Each structure stands twice: as structure tokens, then as C-alpha cells.
Image 1 (cartoon, rainbow, N blue to C red):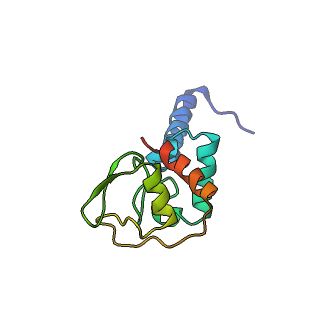
Image 2 (cartoon, rainbow, N blue to C red):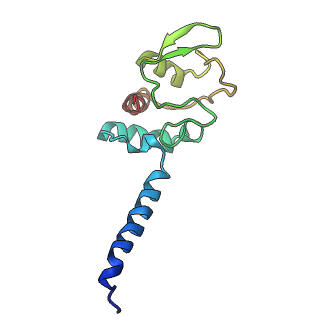
Image 3 (cartoon, rainbow, N blue to C red):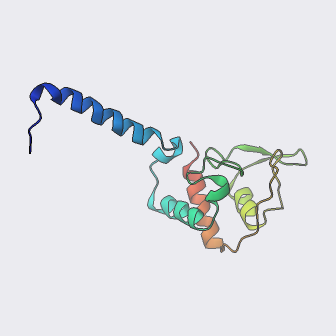
Length: 131
């Protein structure tokens, strides 16, 4: 095996740093959030339950509203009223998706069979994305 000449070591270091930075920067900014074990369990559940297909694997949003920054924010509903995205709002939005439709969201969230405990776990995750 050939040894790398000392004169190339700085260049090798720069290349490795650029590659590492590129790998990290391809992730969503919310991926850098340190999640508690409880929040990580909620994220895993949301991903496994299909929530991520619309809300994003890191809560960044896709066809569904983003979860990053949702907790305790003001949400305008399709009827023009504004509500606070507290735990009760998030719970109701998950349990009964048609109950409080957000203004500007074209798609309707499908029904799900999540238990109250599973919804609570996802709420812990959404709260961790408060930003």
C-alpha cells in the first residue's frame, strides 16, 4: 500500500471536509434538531404510519403542512378563524382530520387508526420541532 506524501495531506483534509459538509448539508435543517428519546419515537411512528409522505420525514412539509415551527403557532382555518396550534388542536387535527381544515391547504389528510398514545407520541415530536 502506498503512503500519501505529507505535501498532499492538507489537500486530502480539505477534500474530506468538503465531502462531509456536502453530506450534512443535503439533509433538511430540521434533521439537525436533537430529539429526546420520546420525540424520536414520535418521529419514527410518524414515518412508519405514512405521515412523512405528506408532512416530510423531518417535518419539513410536502403536500401537507410543515410541522417545523407548528407547535403554539397561529393557524388560520378555512373558515377564516385563527387558532393556536396547541396540543388540543394538533390532537384533533390528527384524530379527526376534517374537523379543522387549514386555509390554503388543498389536500385533505386521510383518516388514520392511530391510538391516543400514538398521537401523543407524535405531538411530542411536533413540539420538538418548535424551532
